[in-house]
Length: 74
Image (cartoon, one colour):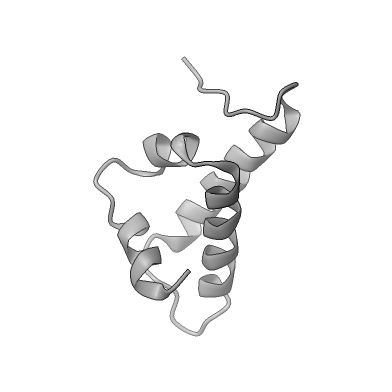
């Protein structure tokens, strides 16, 4: 994922609460990787840390669910 694609996620007006659960597993993995790489730079994108933390939580939720699917909280 290139940096402009990452910035599109970070600036999505829906926010990570709505975007992350809707991602396919491969998309979530790609986003996690891009966020991790971005955070390992001298000047990470604004909001990358929050998105990364929420993406990790989403990944953990999926791993803990019996079918591996996204589990939205009510």
